[in-house]
Length: 131
Image 1 (cartoon, rainbow, N blue to C red):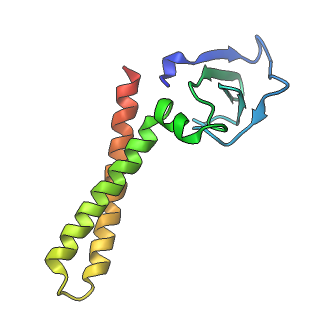
Image 2 (spheres, helix red, strand yellow):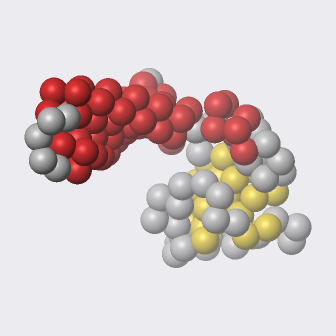
């Protein structure tokens, strides 16, 4: 979902909230006070406005479909983190397996690389989605 696809509704112009919308923790809050879902409609409430957009898939009904279609940056981040961390940890352990604390060193390095690679993958897809 690109930020430009969101509609801003100032509260002083139209203080609305759908009666049947459900408050939810699903989705990125992006600094919102609260967020709501009404079918595929995702509503973020801020102090002075609402930001509203339509998701392709309702995450309450199909979480994986929502990640694939509306938030692929999370899947890419998870995959990059897992694969990068696993590869580094494995390589370090292979090279140092006869040394004391080799497993701990490999786990620490793998965790660090996992965090960096996951964030890089997530950020890259977020930037691509902005175009």
